[in-house]
Length: 502
Image (cartoon, rainbow, N blue to C red; front, top):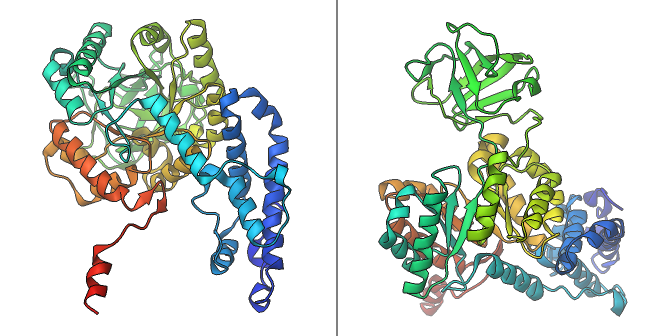
């Protein structure tokens, strides 16, 4: 009975203390809903890579479960001493079947799923190892480090990072050039041999670069002063405008015509917010609604986000396509930026296949559309034997709103665990420590949550070695208490001390 009100369904349960029949009936409804979703997903399951079939079905089972409001039911299950179905993402059907058996339901042997908590967890770990390579400590996530330009000429710096625990070197193709990338890669390969440690090369395609251009007033000084409630203009390069007006251009052609009245336009990581008042084919009138920057000056080369607009922008740019042959020759993993639909993923998969080497992809989730299409993106990714997902929290936070980031990053983790897809937790991990040498309290807590992912990414910074050491220390300590989002009970010294004193 999909979308039923479980609180209403179980309203008589408290007075039926000697009967588990209503509870069994409610869980049976869930089970039937999951099996019905499985039948409807037969076509999707037939199209994925054979190694991914069990994973796509588990994802479907999990989505069928999560369309219900299960909170009242979970309370009753917990009160009965049974699994509340939480923390079962990797083996959803099996968990429901086991609960039903404990409630006295008969499930035919041929219907029993063989995907257990142990096998689901091992499958995810195996895929993480295939994608991200070897690591010294099996209890730690893999560690990725973003390379700065100087590491192209700094072999000792690269070697020090590998010795300090870096498992994956991230090269952002939005910066530098193929010669510099090649030098960085050569330093990694040389350091691998010297240290005896493995380090994968992760190449990030930049995707569509949507950046500001100061076109009108302020263009000569390289900054445009704006005030809240002021009108400004967003223009295409060929738009007709007065150079005395406050006009912002965009490095990506064709976006202005996709704007509608009331759409938000965010500049510089969301520090400046404006609302579309008058749309147009080549130029749009915006009203500045919020300024959160310390200085109310908008500069060139700052990011622009359109969280409310459906833009006809290709995720795979011509520059991205030109980088693919280099990646196929030199990289181990290829990151795909600003994806929106399954068709975007299919386009890159076809391009890689035509080039003769199907590099494992990492799908970067950094737009609202990608979040909404995540099940379809995962299903398309499953046409390869292994791939990953990056929670790219920088642009994602701007797109969905900072207040929603905590909720959405957890949802991405849950769905990826259900699909047995390794996840990279990225953007601003221990950022203050990395840049200043001193961590904030809140970013330490964020680093703990990062331990739910299979890989954690650090940005470039002055204190990278210190940050790597601190991150590993935090993750080792917190990892003793968690397995993904499930708490595990190691002995607590505080308990031992108290009880010893009784």
